[in-house]
Amino acid sequence: MNKKYDVIIIGAGAAGLMSAIEAGKRGKIVFLIDHSTKIAEKIRISGGGRCNFTNLYSNPSNFLSNNKHFCKSAFAKYTQNDFIDLIEKHNIEFFEKKLGQLFCNTSAKEIIDMLVKECIENNVNIDLETKVISLSKTENEYIIKTNKGTYTSKSMVIATGGLSIPKIGASDFGYRIAKQFDLKVTDLFPALVPLTFEEKELEFCKSLAGVSLNASVKVDKTIFNEGLIFTHRGISGPSILQISSYWKSGQPISINLLPGHNMDIILKQRRNETPKQTLSNVLADYLPNKLALAICNKFLINQKIADASNEILKKLSDFVNNWIVYPKGTEGYKTAEVTLGGIDTKEISSSTMECIKHPGLFFIGEVLDVTGHLGGHNFQWAWSSGFVAGQNV
Image (cartoon, rainbow, N blue to C red; front, side, top):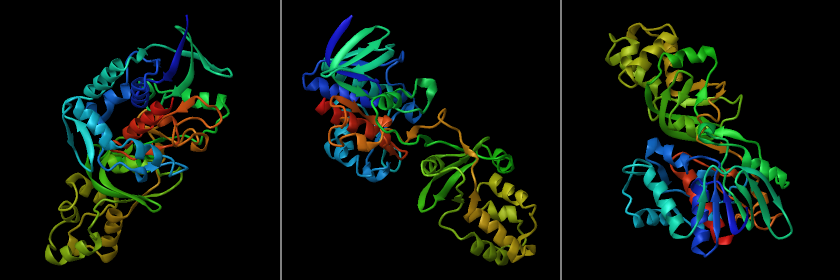
């Protein structure tokens, strides 16, 4: 079989589906393929199964890229409000969890069903379990050989995502294609990922596994104020996932376990007000009980606060307000929500998502060097970049 299409899209995730829908609306004959047995697995598992599909406040400032201006054009053409309109058109009920994060009331499956329905209505041909053997280019078209046959098209869209969560099919396919066509790919790192520690710090974290609190986490001048949770491997939670995108190996991270409070002042006041209380009991008025006791055990001090010197109080307050950690690393791509880095945006037109060197070749979504913050921003990049490519294939 050697079949011609106007557009072939490789990758039936969020970006690929959006691109297929928009190209189909323009009357293009679209073939959307994926190597997986299921469509849009990353959508299905996201947001605890409810899909954090966008963010009310999503804008270019929520993204990391070597070119911070690259995503502006796509966001100007397709915003979170446009996607919300699509959700409402399909009568999908949703709610704001916090910080503008929008989730389905019922299930992420509603988003997948909506996108598939839009594809069907716009005559998009979808074929799963289709593995690409090779991709090549002639003067006027692109040719893909697959396990099911050979197909040609004038426009080829690569929407295969990054390296995050390989158990649901993530691969380096998009980066390999980029290199095949002599496109630069920036350094790649797991992002939005828990951090791990060496044994010394790990003992402290293990003893607190499951304990959570709000914290302020800082690398250089970047700060996130959200939840932190201790794990058997180190630390996680929204604040840690966010800062992981900015952290580089060997860098220290400063963690304030009680943001908005000066623990040194509090302890000195409490020494006068409640002199008979133990240090751990005083700390437990501000921190989770288990954490308060663990901090005192860490420094082998838990006398009555009246007996504690200024030096001891300073040692405790420094730990609470400025715990300096040197992570060993991250949990890697197996738990990372996204890939930091990707195809260099200098290779791509920001207004069309088309490759500058190779007309007709488009790259969208996570495979590009555009990485969003936690909270629905990466899905919005998929919708926006997919829309733009669909308008230009």
